[in-house]
Image (cartoon, rainbow, N blue to C red):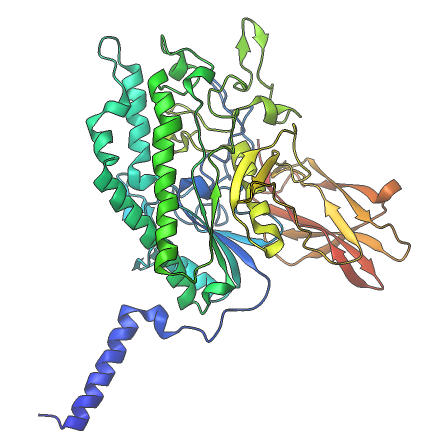
Length: 525
């Protein structure tokens, strides 16, 4: 038998080995959080991954006039997806432009990692590790250990309630011929998925997911006060029955509009169902803070972000849709007023005959994603992260960031005050050229420098696919400091190639101000 001293050493060695294998990331916890430029990172499910972000509205019979991002919309690893069917789109809300961003969310994600019925890997908010397959909490931990993460955005819980299954059943019940028609809100399986014990289980699982995010950041070397977690609730995708554009008799509501719910089920979905899901998310966030009081956690209520822009709402139309022989919808998503005349939610797709995916059904489309992005920029608040309620703005058209007008209402009930991240005496703006540019086209970049000074020169800077910045055109501002630059995209540019632009104000050879970065990907028709 070994001596007592040798036994003690053996026990210590075995304990160390067990610690390494049980929590390898903990064995290499950095002494402190990384320094450098801040990052915003998104985690969660399809409502933050960017699902359906390719399509700017809905169109019948074709997608030619709503394809805003092209087939590379979901590519996040060169010419492919890093995880098949996660659908991390270029229009995803986390890419707010004023801070570096990373999208780790995955369409179809639950709180726990799983493989779906189609065999697709769906990372949850956990520390799952199997070869190259990792849970989102582990992905966050590894990234945050190398980069300074200041804000984490999280959307999770809807799939734990089987939201997709609920929608499918509602459409099936709507399409049943009388007298077989039924109401999905009375379906036994749906009732079971929303029963009190099930709600309590989902609430506990969301709480656990939130605490996993906090643990991931702790393992990466952060104290709770060094970063902020913002939990997003779910937007209302459908109107109440009184505002449905199509009547429930016949089948137009689904066959034409892609919103096959009965009147009673529309009102149930817009009221009790969404209230239950969002209430559970908020309660779970509150539970997590109770378990970890030092956690800096805010909530972003998006339930009213799409007001009067929901799927089948009578205030908007499908692209190229006519009524009584008169065109009502926009001719194309590129029309200046398309954002105000189109739906911000993808139709429910039950017969997949086109380029669209069934998993895109009832998710924020291109306009919806950009509206949420506008909200998240206000949440970021130049690094002083704040929560609140995202509400559609009264203004029409697009902002200078090429996004729909939305307003963040803070907990005080007042609109959020937008902070300026720059304290430099010179300010440079740069309008968004659009998230996509066609090969062989010309991207038009507009902006303004203030004040106009003789010793300040402007220069366009360009980066391809995240590479180094290269100096481009010298810009001569006009009256009031306004400028316009035409940038030619080569016809040979491959689809998915990402251009980044910014404008630097130089004085004495040094940058005294730099505009926000604008990004666009090449699209081939």
